Amino acid sequence: MKPDKPLTTAPLPLDTAGPPGGKPNAAGTPPRFSKKRLAAAFAIAAASDAVGAFFTLAPPVAWVVDIVTAALLFAVLGWQWLLLPGLVLEAIPGLAVFPFWLLVVAAIAGWGTVRPKPGRFRKGEQ
Image 1 (cartoon, helix red, strand yellow):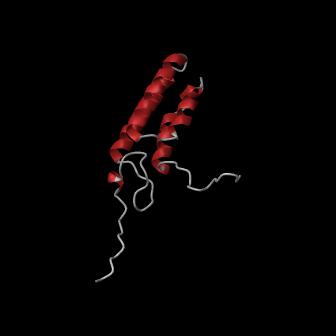
Image 2: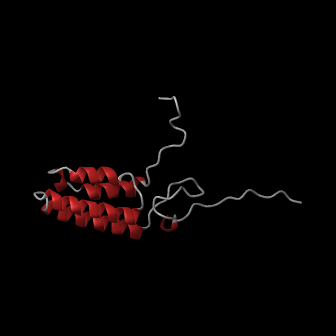
Image 3: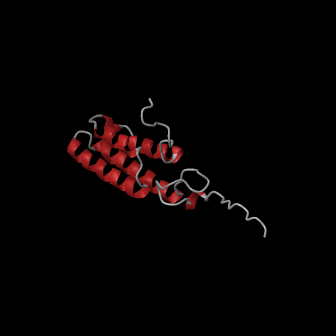
């Protein structure tokens, strides 16, 4: 009998890397988002930043817009920790005139999913 060859897998293409926010694929790289998902996320972020700039003087309305935006972005991109600081920054009155949602989506598109390195912090270490 011949010894079996070890199974090797190629990395998945960018458009089919799996669900957003999913686990790394067989190659160990974090999943990438399809162009359609990123385009939808950028469109949601741009619309929210445009609408939010007009409601800067009405914080309760701006908060509703930001919560809806965060929910839509979570639906499109999956659970992304980088969306939470964007939500906090948008909730601060006066800062909503800056395009934080666009910056957050651009960061997610550029860096991918932010995950801690396994075993980096162990019990008793600092």
